Image 1 (cartoon, one colour):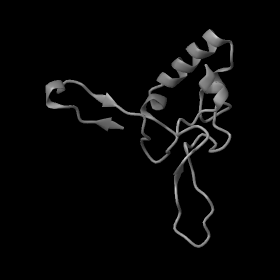
Image 2 (cartoon, helix red, strand yellow):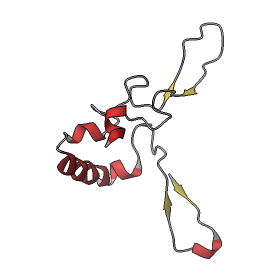
Image 3 (cartoon, helix red, strand yellow):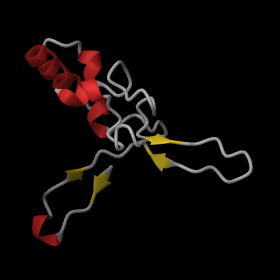
Length: 99
C-alpha cells in the first residue's frame, strides 16, 4: 500500500504493510522479495527455519491462521471481522514473535 507523503517530504514514498492486489496475504515487500531476505537473516541469526518468520507458513498465528483477524460464525447476522485476540493482528505465532 503506497501512501502520499506530507508536502515537506515530496520525494519520499511511504510503504505500508497493507495488502496489494487481490490476494490479501501479499504485501509489497513480498512481491519485491524483501521478505525472503529478511526471513533468511532471522533464520541465520536464530537457527530457526525461515518459515517460522512467515505468516503464510509455520510462523502463522494458530488462531487466525495468519490473517490477523477472525470472522466468527454468525448465522443470522452480517459477517463480522474482529482483530485476532491471540496475535493482536500481527499474524504471527507467539513463538515467531519471541524472536
